[in-house]
Image: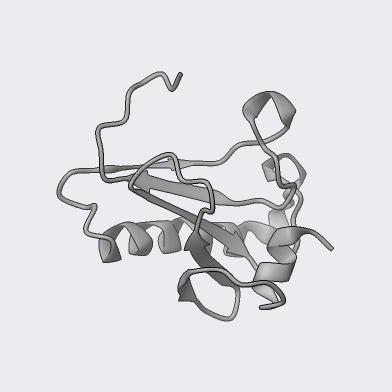
Length: 112
C-alpha cells in the first residue's frame, strides 16, 4: 500500500485541510511554497497516465477541491498554481495521483 493510501485511510498522520467521501487534502511534508497542499483521491490511481474514462468524475472533483483548498488558504486574490506530475522525469515520487496546490509567494515560470 502506498503512503498516500495510508494517509487516506488515516493509518499515518497528516495535516488534513479537507476531506470528503472521495478525496483528502493535506499539507505537503516538504513544502516548496508557503502554501503547499496535496489533493488526492482515496481510490488508488497511480498517475495521470493511467486514468480511464470511468475515473473522470473523481478527477473533476480533484480540481474542484484544489480550488476550494486555494480559496480556504486565502490564495484567490494573489493567485496559485495547480500541478500534476507524472513519471520520473516530471518529478513524481509517490505513484498515487495527486494535485499540488501552491501559493503564498510569486512562482516563476518555467519552474526551475
